Length: 108
Length: 121
Image (cartoon, rainbow over all chains, first blue to last red):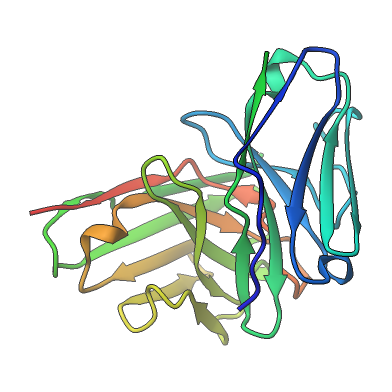
C-alpha cells in the first residue's frame, strides 16, 4: 500500500517561513490534502488538492506538489500556527486514505 | 453550520463490542461519503473506514477488517461504526469525518469532535 512520510518536527521563529514536507513515491501525480490539529481539538482541513486553500485559512498558507514531495508552506508564521500538521492522499488502488505521521510545528 | 456529533464511546473490555454513532447536520449528508478516522493517545491520524454516500460501497483499514462494520441511515443523517472483538490497540479517539459530495479521491472536509474508546481489562 502507498506510504507517505513526514518529518516529526519543525521549529520556526515568528515571522519566518515554515515548510512542512510530505514524501511519497511519485506523490506529484496524486492530490495531497493537509490538516491542522491543535491540542485537544479535531483536525481542520488546511489545504486541499495540493494548493486549494479552504475559506477561513489565512493566505499565509500555500501548497505545492511535484515529483516525490508535497509541501505546505506557512509564511510569516504566528504563534497561533503552532500545531500538528498531517498530509493525506487517497490510494485509489486500495480505496484507502493514507495519512502521513504528522509534523509538529513549534513556534520559537 | 456543519455539525458532526459522535456518541457511544466509553471503556470496554478486550473482546467485547461497542457501537459508535455520528449525527450530522448542516451539509448534504445523503450525498457525502462518510468516514471514521481514529487517533490513539499521543499518536497520529489513522483512517478506519469509508461508506459511500448511497451505502453501496464500504472499505476498511487492514487493522479493522473483519471486526468493524460501518453503516449509515440517510433518513436520520446518522453514521455508525460497529466495533467487535475489540483489542487494546483499538484504544483511540474516533472521529467521524465527511467528504464533499461528488468526489471519488476522498478527503475530509467535515470533522466531529471525536469520541474516546478505551479498551482495557
